Amino acid sequence: MGEKNLLKQDSSIEEKELNPISGWIALFIGILFILSPVFGFINLVNTENDIFLIVTIILFIVAIFIFCGLKIVNPNESIVFVLFGKYYGTIKKPGFFFVNPFVSAINPTYESQVTKLSKVGDKDSEQETTTSNTKKISLKAMTLNNQKQKVNDELGNPIIIGTIVIWRVINPTKAVFNVENYKTFLSIQCDSTIRNVARLYPYDSEDTEDYSEKSLRGSSQEIADKLKEELQKRVEIAGIEVEEVRITHLSYAPEIAAAMLQRQQAEAIIAARKKIVEGAVGMVEMALNSLSEKEVVELDDERKAAMVSNLLVVLCGNKDAQPIVNSGSIY
Image (cartoon, rainbow, N blue to C red):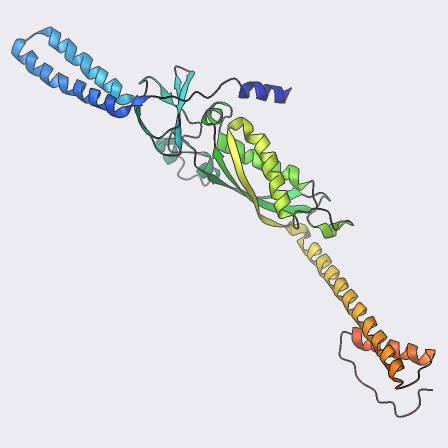
C-alpha cells in the first residue's frame, strides 16, 4: 500500500520545462519604462497635467515588475517555479531569461543567511550537506560522505563501515515536490541501504566454511554495485541518479576487534605451520629416496622412523637445532 502511494505521488506532478523569452529584451523594455518617467516629470512640470503623472507612476511600477521577472540560470543549474501555490514550470537551460514576475523559485534545501547566522554556535555537520544558500537546484555531480556507522554483518558481528556516494539531480521537479529535503532524504536512505546490504554478507569469507562466498572485505566491487542498485531504487522518487557508491572504511567494531585480531593471527600461524609441515615431509621423503638410490647407507624401518622423527623436529622446530655427535652405536 505504501509503494502504491509513493508511485501515485511520483506521477502526480510531471516536469514541465519552460521556454521563457530572452531577458535582454525584457531588460531593454524595463530601461525604457524607467527612462520614460524622467521625460514624464519634465512634461509634468511644463504642462502641469495629471495624466502624465498617472502614466509615469504606471510605467515605473511596470518597470519594477519587469526587473523582478529577470532570472539568471548558470550551467548545470535549474530553477523550479510555483505560481500562487501551483507548479508553474522548470528552467533547465542556462541563460538570461524573463519569467512571470509573480512566480517564486522554490528549493527545499534553501536556508537564508539570517537563519545561518542564528546557528553560528551549532556544530551540527549535517547542516553543511543538507542546506543550500541559493534557491537554484544544482544539477552537478555531488559527493555524499556518509559517516562511519556500526552495523551487523551476516554472522551478527558488529562492524564499522563508511561509504561515499557520487550523485546528481536529474529531475528537479521530483526533487522539490516529492520529498521534504532531497539531500536529507538521500543521506537517510544511504544509511538504510548500508544496513540492509551489510547484513547479507559476512565480513570475511574466512568466517564461513565456504571460502568462495562473497564477503564485504573480499568482494568490494560486487558489494558497491549492490549498494548502488538498491540505493538507486530508493531515491528514484526524488529524481536523483546515483552514479557510484564506494566503501571508504571497513573494520570490526572496537569491542570485538582484539578477539578477531587474535583469531586472524591464529589462522595465519596455522596456515604457516601447514606449509612448513608439507615442506618438511617432502624434504624427508627426498632425503630417504636419495639415500636409498645412492646406497649411502642401509636403514631398516626402525632407523628410518628415527631419522624421520629427527628431521621433522629439525625442520618444523621454532628454534635452531642443537646437533649431538654420537660416537657410538645407536643400539
